[in-house]
View 1: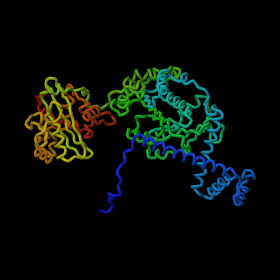
View 2: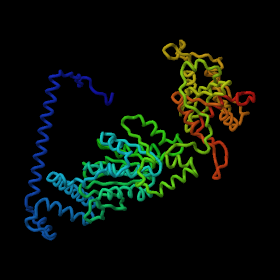
View 3: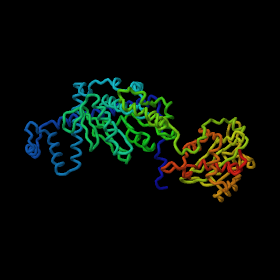
View 4: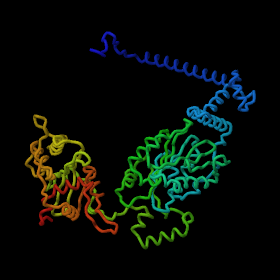
Length: 562
């Protein structure tokens, strides 16, 4: 058969003994050591040749025209002169190579200065603790102890930005190969926020900022927007996420330098997927300090609020909340305090969010009766009225199956189980339903018949699957697969169903068992016009809500249902 190996030419794999493996490793180490010594010798030979006087009349003539004295006309100077002439003639590669060599030369010279005088790269002494609000001292201690992800949230006047930039500058100056990237959602907001904050932090330390060519500690420019620490060549870069692909092209001439500090200003304005992309793209060093700063959005279910809450117990992350009350008045000024006190009197709810950084209920929230609560297996076994609700879906919209129980006496709806899928045909989702409804053994596994099919009681009311009646063919498919699928009546309008759900004493959702349902119910918002008037209930991000409506459609239609 063409391309097939000849068995006679295949040697069996030899399993080496420990001593053989050790000897082979030692031999490999000797060879690699010899190779390193060989390369070192070649480098020394190259350095020697480059330092010798040029013997080329052509090159010597060119160097003479460039004004080099005879004792300066070495082979290294000849190579550089050739690159300069080619670059001057428009050779782009020659120009790039020349620029790279100059950057490496500058870096080597700086390293030599640092070896000779360690103070050459030390910033002037600065007591950060005396310049920040006391509430942030714990954050500094955590960073110094090794924490590399810091979430700073809080209201206006909480001093989180002024602290963050001073602390990050502190780390930047202590790490001579660290580059620092500051991010905003939109590039046109950088100059008056991140860029201005960096310049402020530098001046706060008593260090100087100049333009290119000026004698100063830092060189700052707007186009390109960057700040360079002249002692080491370190850069502070600024970028918007208008085009996240641009960040992948960030490179540095000195291979030792990498982005080690990343700042997210107004973190809640980013898309979490973009945040992940940037982190994967730019944080390649062993050390990577991230500061994420934001004023908490009013909605507790906003992704940034949820992330901060989820990470609060993560030992690798520090989540810190501050308010203007944690900041000395001399940092804020009397006018800020006066305006803040007025805001509490005139708009207390807005003040709670904007000044205290609290999450508050958003206008238009539909289901204010939702409660997150764990539902135990013992409680499920005691439920009397149980139905399953199903919302059809395939591509963009998910297919959703929910377990719903209702207590008429308490007027309490419980959502305690769910399945949801994308891109599955009816035969496949039917298999999911049957597995979900299957009776369980003492080990929790589905009981199966002799053909391997899940065993369940089709005639039990609790196993009735109530679906959107518009998908009559899908309902017929399910019934052919042995599922008691029933179309939910269209006589109950969507709005009536939502009003009925809103009117329950409680909607209890086990977030662990039904995460999609919990997410949709707490985030669902009515449509409100610019003047605050109700416009209706949106038909989006409501697949689990629809599945619940189908599950209880007969209760909604019955005016006697408590």
